Length: 51
View 1 (tube, rainbow, N blue to C red):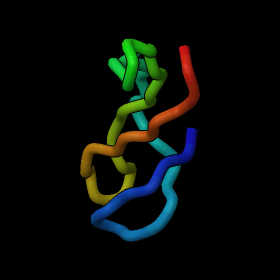
View 2: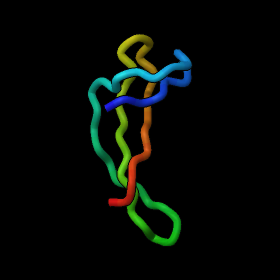
View 3: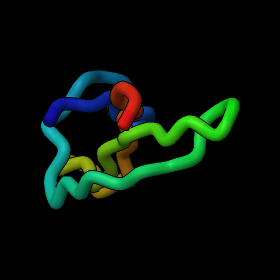
View 4: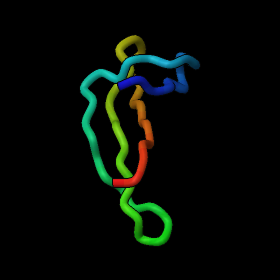
């Protein structure tokens, strides 16, 4: 899964990626991927579609 690293300011492959669910507007559940940047170690986050 690819996400945007704010520290590196470019798209990177998310390492140690885990899929989570979070609350969205109107009680809708949203899927997201979270992990770390392989270059700088910053936490990365990518919001996906509805669950």
